[in-house]
Amino acid sequence: MTKDDLLAIIADELGRIAPEVAFNSVSLDDAIQAAFDIDSMDFLNFIIALHERTGVNVPEADYARMRTIASAHAYLQERLGI
Image (cartoon, rainbow, N blue to C red):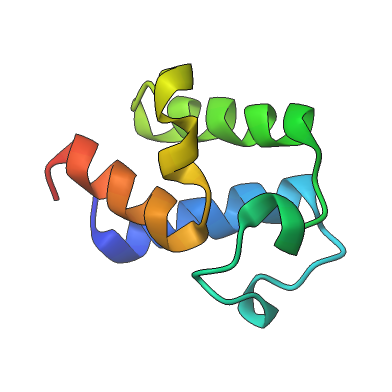
């Protein structure tokens, strides 16, 4: 898996949760919940979907590290070693 693959997975999963928001219209540094207008349950579903697609378990203590697209991307890269 490459960094681009990872970003595509993030975009795909956010698109499933908030199809009304164009991924390309959001800054990578925007807070995911605010930018995609999702609640905590949708955010949890996003984390679960990322786990299913990447195999990376994100413990609740690390949810803050998944706050933005850029930070989620960096976190997953770190955990996957890419």
